[in-house]
Length: 230
Image 1 (cartoon, rainbow, N blue to C red):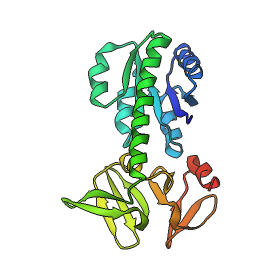
Image 2 (tube, rainbow, N blue to C red):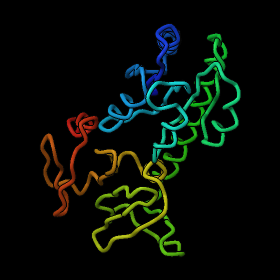
Image 3 (cartoon, rainbow, N blue to C red):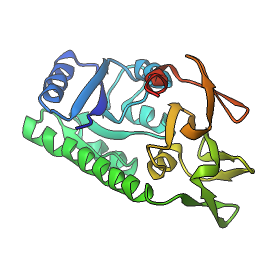
Image 4 (cartoon, rainbow, N blue to C red):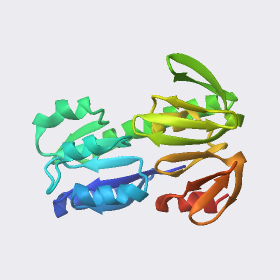
């Protein structure tokens, strides 16, 4: 069973300890790190990816909601706070759940199971997509058919992506996270926060870059293990 990688952003040591203990009791969760402020978390996420963030609201330096708004393609987020008045804003930002401190393990399990269910649904979509050899994307007010076999790499450009194929390039208004969920996992891999590549187009690689069809794509530090497994 694949685990859901997660981080905790919490400045209160006792609250962080409670979350850490809860996470360790859940077989499908993997704790990557605990950060006492959002700035440290931003530094970590610059070169590493995660699938779930447990986020306190009242943090030093940068408040939790402000941090959340800085994420272009946020993973699943579970708010953990003693203040109920931020719930509406949290759900407006598409958080998965909102836990009011102190919360019991049972309530924690309800929240993380929501994340697990959502990821299972994405995997089902991926399995269905694996049976197809193309995707339709919105490009300049048209639905354009793009064959998986022709894609070289995909690059994030804020709220847009650039799809580079062996024939031409396309710009589509969709997040990198969304497009990744539609691509067959056995054909494409994210090797950088901003780049997804076609495995069949790889010509050579080292610890820092991948060469494919004449393009040189950087490997993010948090993604080096993906290339090592090829």
